[in-house]
Image 1 (cartoon, rainbow, N blue to C red):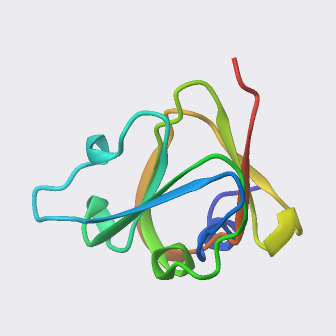
Image 2 (image 1 turned 135 degrees about the vertical axis):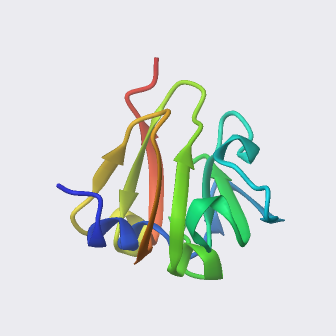
Length: 121
């Protein structure tokens, strides 16, 4: 499944269910490398600018976090796993996988409502 509009289902918020959420503020000189190792990070703006939120661990409900509801840049800086995202809370809906090391920025607003980590090495 493609990572265009469906990835929009990827970001909406995070209810901590064994996961971790952190919030940062991007700057003009922001870069994907600002995402700490072991996290999946999203930015509200293109080119890794604007507000940043990041997760580690599985999260059954990300809907309470604004950046996960409409992000334009992301980076899976997972240390050993791929990120599996869902357009619905509680791991529901047609999911997709973002391999570790994948980063992207575009003009389309994306979202996700829950996630877990898979294919860990």
